[in-house]
Image 1 (cartoon, rainbow, N blue to C red):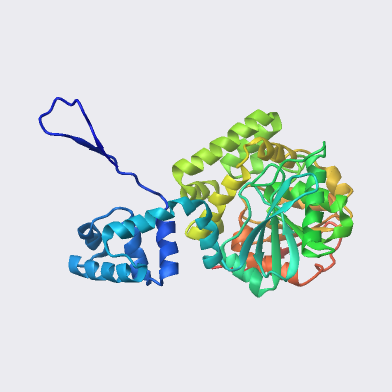
Image 2 (image 1 turned 180 degrees about the vertical axis):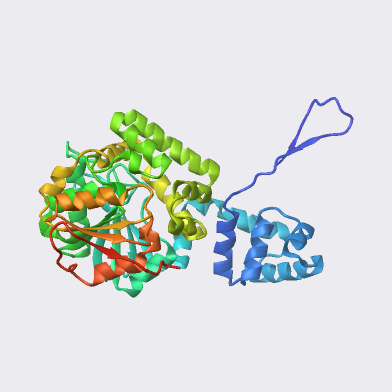
Length: 422
């Protein structure tokens, strides 16, 4: 934008030049590249151009001569139908109005095994669902942890190849899902939302999955709608406080969260807000590496940008409507919810990693021994605290093989040498 500045007292007229940047340059360049058939090299070049870089600067970044860059830009002009640099820039930034919908367009192109849809409930509520894997495969409903849904392109492809239809249901007050209506409790609302999803996809029953702080909810939902649940499992589940001592938890951040959750909702919310802020300041890679520093397999996951992106987006999704519901969820997870296990009509499979810094094997073992009819514990010798990402083949195998082998009451199995998903 160019604006005259009157009354400066100077002999020569002056202008104020304001350069407006747009963080959507990558999204817009991807959209143009896809629509105009640009090569990968041309797409990368277009991105730099839309960021406002000059040809000489682009040449230096790309380690090419300015002449080469001009020739490549000429090819971009021809493919996009633009006659000049200014026209190409106008075309790119004319897409700004579409930025809100670009994400959906790009996701459809780059993530063929993932879809998002909303259900309008009879109470007028909106229920948000992410579908990953096969659109017609075996129905599995997953509830998100504080890190959201464990989905990456590679994981989604694994589900598709295994003919698994993973339906990730956002809980009330998180993501785009509205809070309960008409005085209904959150617990009952989750159960009814799951039934609505099953009815929508034409499935009578499903496999139910949860992770970490959702352990209590899996046992609870399995008791509320047992006729709609075929089997259920929890990965890296947080145990009731009577079985878990914070002193046995390796992660300092989790110990703080446990103590805060046991004291007050406000303090729990403060810790959650601090954690999200710390992730933003440190970056997801350093934050996860610090949180899981005692687990080699989890630290290795910080080298996978798709995993980091999933965790970062998931944590933002969980707190999109604020910290009230996540705080309440954490307090429930770290309370004494043993009665849910006592009354659960299903035998829930528990996968516990030996290197999980958030939950000790001792707590999981004691819990399984206390409720042998409700728990089938598998201690994973090479597992950490993020097995939904690192041990996808194990989870797929459990989904596909049917019921788990019968075990002596109170016993557990050990699983090792599982190849993490690359």
